[in-house]
Image (cartoon, rainbow, N blue to C red; front, side):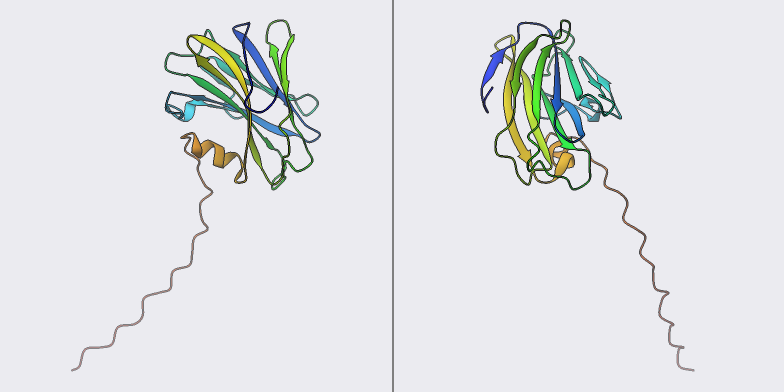
Length: 183
């Protein structure tokens, strides 16, 4: 596939794995027509591996992580599932990594499509592909949209609440002594 191209899905259950020469964190976001999640429960990743119609599978470091979508089990109102990836190593970019997404029939393992986003550089997270509903039929589109602010940037763009680490407590100076009132 090339960026922006799409194909119809011939099966209700598809798996999207994203492989690269480095370990990647792969996740899926269930989006409504406005392009946002309904709640943080629609963000599927290693710490929240299942949601309605979408599951995360770890490759365990020896195989690519994958997002499986059962379009028949996706709830009404969800019109798109975006599959994202970010390098596991902090600060790592996609420069020279060239991840490849492979879309498979989840039941037979047959390859339906592959996509390698071209010309990546300073991106630290990527919307790789999206599975979307158009006129009652599910399709997959090659996206390759990069983000320089990591997975947190993608998550917040799609409406997920990202908790930032708490700022360290700042010492508070004691109040200045009060001058004694004149006698």
